[in-house]
Image (cartoon, rainbow, N blue to C red; front, side, top):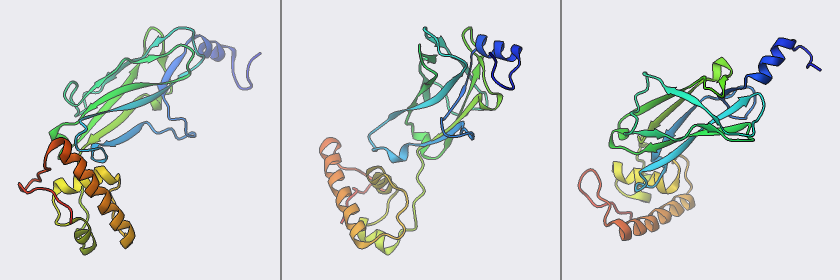
Length: 217
């Protein structure tokens, strides 16, 4: 029995030649890109992992299947320096899986946004799936764009420095500080003070780009 609208040859190709494509699982407009920023992580964390989601176009299998890929020459992220890619495999019994990308936090990310383009290729186990979902575009940075340092922010966090603001963002996990109520600002300041105490206990004083010790009022 064939599905409505399917020809016999189409059904045979679908069932006999499983294919792989990037997949998000959220509706028909499947995003095949992501923007990653280390700024939201603690300043002491130097690595993280991003998972590129893939899906099989066809049936699951009782054995693992190898996913083949290449990194486009247009990528500005450098293998071994900014990232490494883990084992690319569609595990047995799965329709959806992921390719791990291990990111490394490097000094040049503080002033640059790096690009990594991963393109799926045919393998012995899997053909290429949907042609418009074969390339995953990942951007990686560690940049921070400081807000206007208003009186409220100054009275809450003290004098501005790039290192201090990076620490604040990593602790609070927010980058926007507009419309803060006094109670919210006070709670944020307390959280940052406690986090700084913990940081200094483990690492010593946090020194900013001007050579001054980071403190909160």
